[in-house]
Amino acid sequence: MTTVQRTVVITGAAAERGIGRATARRFARDGWAVAALDLDGATSEKLAAELTERYGVPAYGGAVDVADEDSVTAAAAAVRDSELPVVGAVLNIAGITSPVPFLETTLALWNKIFAVNATGTYLVTKAFLPDMIEGGYGRIVNMSSVSAQQGGGVFGKTPYSSAKAAVIGFTRSLARELGPTGITVNAIAAGAVDTDIRVAGTTPELEASIVASVPLGRQASVDDVTALFAFLASEEAGYITATTQNLNGGSYIA
Image (cartoon, rainbow, N blue to C red):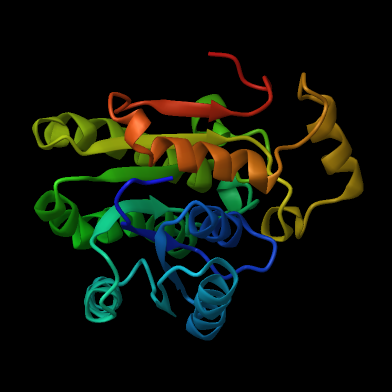
């Protein structure tokens, strides 16, 4: 739990059985104020109301298209106008994947995957970074993927793996640049996580093969992921920066 209440900004927060929503609940349980942002603004608003009612913390829910600069700018202004405590953490969770084989991809698909996963991470971070610098505390945690490390092999193919690799490069460079401010920047490279978004479109055979490839014998749960987000955003993690945290059950060993 934070000793001073701060706000965590979470993108991709609306999906019912998704990492973003579970993370919002975890941080609210830990005493953080929460700004839940998603393309689905109405569901984000309902989530914010739930967090306040259930955990007694200030919360804001609103719409954002992380790939659109104007939308991100407007969302950041709305969070500031909501009078939540100062922003202390930004969790870039919003993302999309694609199983399309490379020769079947289009430039439009490539650009869309990069726009949400990589450019979205850039835009949201840039929008809220001044708040963290001014507040004297900042934790930025970006969602990457084991696909970026091992070259696909889970579900998303080349555009997704490439975009998530860009997130890792962004994380390392920004961490070095922000070091003197005390703000940390880390990435989580998750393997297969049991969420509705990821499982949609796969087959029972593929799911079984994924589990068989994991030494721990299971996919990650959303709670596995939220625990890592919570630690990396904590005061105790203040000397951890520029890292890519592997959360894959041993399926990829660097």
